[in-house]
Image 1 (cartoon, one colour):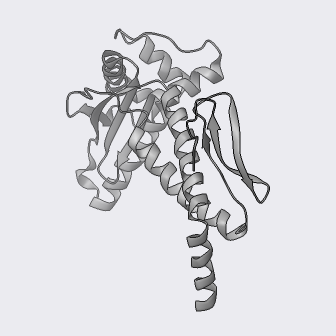
Image 2 (cartoon, rainbow, N blue to C red):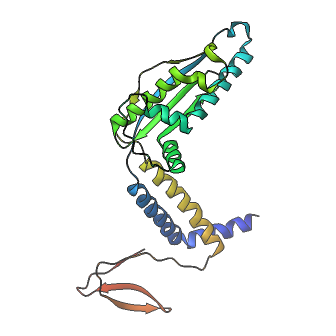
Image 3 (cartoon, rainbow, N blue to C red):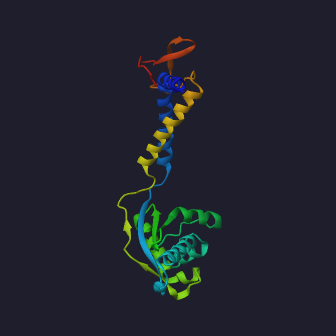
Length: 240
């Protein structure tokens, strides 16, 4: 077992350039994917689901009831009917969603995120938009619909109340995509994939050439592969 671990370590040490090359490639593509995505702001609000008459219930039953109702409300937020109510709520929301029903729902799912604080009945709503004021308008509209029309989405009637417990908190800077998180994930993934590649193909070589000119001359070849290049003005090409 120790011998196998030693062999693996020797392979990695011998092929560290391959690992670096694969990591750089992963980071490069992660950067491209991150750059092409639109920058979005986030606005957040918290709501509390309250069930009246729960004083007669024990704590466990009461918490599970609040959990159940909160889960239902967070799911109906992504429905088409809820989106229609949001658009007709009177808030200044730009309806830039597709006319196709399926695409419209997918766009809405990317616009709003919800989560429930377990056993508390507290719902956190996050709205994202390329415009800061739009993110805030959307999260306010969602909260308003939950507060005023929640009864149409569950069977408990007026025994349930939804209360807004704070005002919207909107980021001053775009939070999506998370550049640092994406690059960190790409870096770690590159190290893992690079290490696995070296283990499977210990004799393979990966070269990344950054050319400084279009017309290149071969300096020399060793073992049938070029080890360096020069441009016509004599500048050496950087090779990793």
